Structures are given as structure tokens and as C-alpha cells.
Length: 455
Image (cartoon, rainbow, N blue to C red):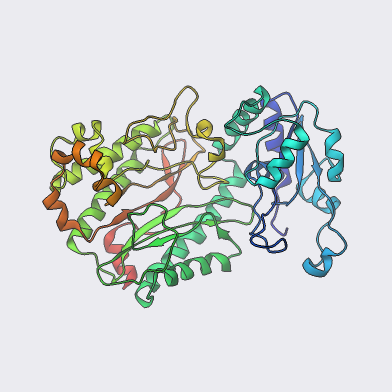
């Protein structure tokens, strides 16, 4: 509750929304689910759409927006809660803090829902409440009212381009995340397990009064894209992949990945592949500019990786042809990145509505189907760039892929790179009026710099 709120800029967001739609909306914040008994809760984090206009992560709250005005609906804490949680702000105090025009108890909401649009909250308890009060579904899998779709598109229009609040907060999260990664690089040689490296990183984030924007990935099994276990020992010859990002108290995210050798020195095969991934990373950042197509940046990464793998003798043939047939995706199966904002995969609760320009649909091609963003870039967007190389057994040993790409891969040569399970390099990029600003530039990417920092 002590986060500083810029009421002027929050009200500006509300006014911008009013210019895009001509009907009232209600947005729920959500409720923390219980772990194993009622009083033991998971940490609460408000719905990002609610946060964007309210500014504070208020549990069990609703806002109603119309013509740029905001009404807050929430109940005051029960008198008994003071025993367990101490003094907490009243509804009226919070109303002033976020610049609400009116504040009401939750029971008043039922009289203020005529003609409103809304968006589903992820937790089941709140979603059930939404359905009960609105008397309709808000599920993306079911037919939505036209005004709900209009609301989604309006919010996407606003949240795609970041304002002063957002950029300030994202940069705060980035700076803390950069230091967390530097802490890990400097301490890895004194750590025995993945868990110890994770602890060093998350300890730095927590000490800055931030949380993790997503479940940290700290693993020697870098080929598992979203590995969330930390029980492996660190052994000589291992590469450690750390995908860890902080989230500020106001909810804004960062997302950084680095890969480094646990002993402090890359082997020759690891260095070859690392430099290849870095070449794709650098080429993509160089290509970012307003009007540029993010899909083309993904395909640029694919081509650089294909060319590099041909030069290393792992792939065979013409790089352009290999990309056209998606042979590169055996080793680089995911998309080049995603939007970044209040969500680490920003607005992905809306499916592809946010990530894909209107009229575009997700490809079914092996090399494109996991692309999360397919829009022309605009100044004010923040995106990630995160190429990678992975030896995923489920892909390399799959009969379908083995047959289709058997002649495109030098399988004997690939054995020489058995100590490279997974490498990813990820940075957060602000699209500017003239090109790109690497928000995470203070964290080294060059192999020599990483080795020097580890020493």
C-alpha cells in the first residue's frame, strides 16, 4: 500500500479509455486462492487490467469506469482482521490514494452493472462471482458480448504503448533483475546446486521489495524451456540457464535470461553455439525499429541460427531452404520473444488478440506456431528478444521429425556438441522513435565478459 501512485497519469489512462469506448466497464481485482486450508493463502496479485487503471493491487475489489471517472467498490476490513494483519487502510483512504471519484461497499455493485463490459479474472472464485453478478460468461472459449470484445481491443490499444508510469516501473524491475543476474554470475562457483543460485537471485529481488514476475528458471537442463525444479547439482562442464525477472510493487515486469558455464569457462563447443545464439540476438535487436514486423525479426533469428548451424556442420544445405522447411526449429522451436508490461507475457490472458495484429492468425508451421507476437512494432512498445539453441530429446528423437529432417542434420557431428543442452540469451527492448533501446544493456552478453565477471 506504500507504493507511490501518480494519480494524474492514472486519470489520463482512464480518459484515454473513455475516448475509445462509449459504455461503462467493470474490472475485478481477484482473490488469492488458499493453499491447503482457508487461512493459508498463495501470494495475492491483482488482475493486470484492474491494476492498469487502479494502480494498486487491491484484493477483492472492483472498479467501474465511465467517461473517464472511476468508482471503487470494496468492503472495509472486518474488525477482527486487525488482530492478524494490523491496521489497514479504509475504503475511503484507498479511494483517495488511487484518485477514485466515488467509493462504495461491494454490495452496491449490483446496482451499477447495467450495460457494462468486463474481462474475466483468472482465479476461479472471482470468475464465478463475475458470472453470478453479470449473468453471463466472460470465457474466451465461449461467445462473448460485442462490448466485451470492444473493451479488450481498447485496453490492448492502450497497453501496447507504455506511458511514463510503465516505463519508469519496467526500468526499476530491469535494474533489480540485472543485479540479481550479476549476483548469480559472481556466486555460481561457490554454489553446489541450482537451488543455491536461485536463492541468491531471488534474495536480491526480495531485498529490493520486489517479487518474481514469473517462476524462476535456473537449471542445467536448459533444453527444458520452462524448467521449474532446482534440485540438480552443479557439475564441471555444465551450462546453467537462468531466466529470472523481477516485478515491482506496482506490478510491472522484467524478463532476462543468461546462460553461463558453472566453472567460469565455456568449452569450445559451448562457446561456438553461444556465439551463434548471440549473433542471432544482436542481429534481431539491430533490426528493431518502428514499422518493422516482429515476425520478420523472428525469421531473421531463424536464418542466422540456420546459417551458423550450417557453418558448424550441424545442419546441411542452404540456410534459406532450411528455414523455409523449418529445419532450424529442431534446435530453435520457440518464438523470438513477446510483449512485456504488467504481465511478463503481456496481455496473454486475451489469447492472440494482443499479440497478433487484427486479421492475422497463428501459423501451424513448426517454425512459427509458437510465435507470441506478430505485429508491426511501434514506438513505446517493450518486447523481449530471446533466441536459443536446445537439444530437446522429445524433438530430436520424435519419429516424425527424425524422418522429415534426417538428411538435414549431421547426426554424427551433433554428438560433438553433447555438452550443449540449452542456451538462451534474452533482453528487454524498448522500441523508440528511431530504433531500439536495450533496457537490460548493463548485463553483459559477450562470452568473454561473462567469464571475466565469474572470475
